[in-house]
Length: 169
Length: 169
View (cartoon, chains in turn cyan, red):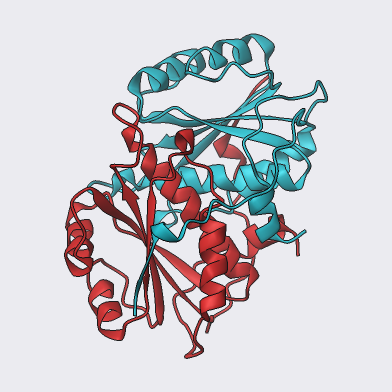
């Protein structure tokens, strides 16, 4: 299947089977993540791979709408000490988002399902995750990706809408 | 080629040939963009497709390091009126970043090259682009994607680094 078709097939999956994601699959997800571009190639990201049942439970309680039955979560966090200095420092959000999107697409291609749950910029959510993972203040959790074998099959789609397109010819 | 391989092959391309990107290719890029996920499916994005030579010249002067010889630019902008209300409003940056990454990957798959140039959150850059495109203040240009047929061939790669991986077992 083409990358374009994988993009259409990638849908938010919120129900998972019990089948475990393997360490080899996790490695592929992380290699995909770290193939993303970053501003001035600063790679200002950290990846927290959560497999521990207690930690998974705590993490799922740190945000809204995140009580899914996944057995794997990857937290993508910005390392602001490794990001560009101000005023461009906040490009780390875009860098971590590109890495997150690559994880979703790689998961889809492997037959896994995933859901991107937002953490930063909601301070309450970010602080809860920081506390659970014992992170210093310069490591800011941005996305919580729930991953597993899908127990639901949303249809592939684009949501192309010509109203959002503006051509300057 | 697999989506994973396309992710590795996607590199920043900053030199282009004269060959024009077709309208059909642009449609595919935009369909890929709008297949990206967005917080609560708000789709808070606008895409400005710049083909006009004068506008291209002005836009390339609005930011740093953006004086490339591309003949097509897509500006991905956040529509904050369509985004989530506060405190989650700023998820539009992550949504537009996912859309931007999809454009880069779709371009790579079509044999095109592209470079993601940062605009927001550098206010000076965003304001210049807003002025050139005559955008209202609630439409915030986030990324400037230069696109064309590549005149350089960076090697595929991941920048996987185990130091950025933290496993909680």
